[in-house]
Image 1 (tube, rainbow, N blue to C red):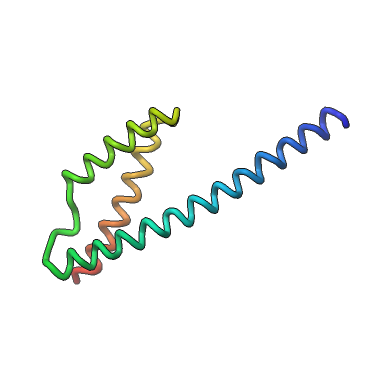
Image 2 (cartoon, rainbow, N blue to C red):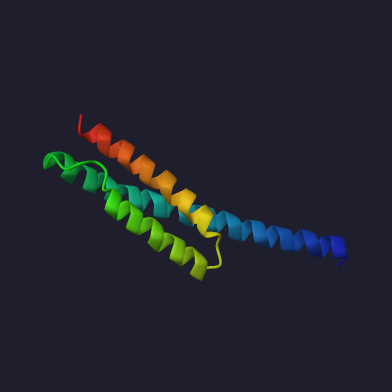
Length: 97
């Protein structure tokens, strides 16, 4: 097997792993959003605010620590969680209308 063929095989293996991990991410996010939708409905039923800045701040700190432990850029993790939180709040606000 040539170096180029071996490199192509390694690339295929990496891409197959990436594809599996992408599927895991999608299913994990779907499961997370099922729970946050339930939280949003509960908040709407009890006239609770759609946002909880104290919890959000704690979650960001927690995720940054996990990212450091996992050797992932904490700033990237923070941006990722901020995006998710903003989507959750948007859904919660829609439920309160």
